[in-house]
Length: 102
Image 1 (cartoon, rainbow, N blue to C red):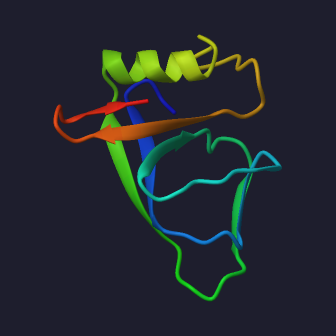
Image 2 (cartoon, rainbow, N blue to C red):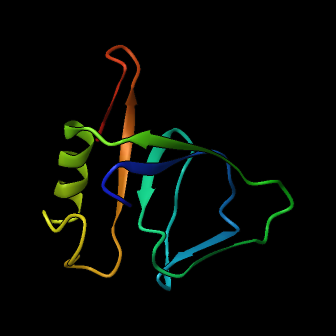
């Protein structure tokens, strides 16, 4: 993630047989949530299911609210010097207010 933008992922269709790795750690991203992952680490996807995997990928301009949420998830080590090799941040969509809430 750079200082100006973030790439968020919202799984639309996925399957338990999808193997999704970030920094050699398997992650499970489920439909109905929005995720941020640190893709500067090695990552891969193997779709062992018989369905197509579909994600909506959203590039957003960072703002104070998003930065606070990411800092909290990464232990205030944003954007460098992460205390863990990988962290993921899951957001719930709050439709009425029109912003992301975790």
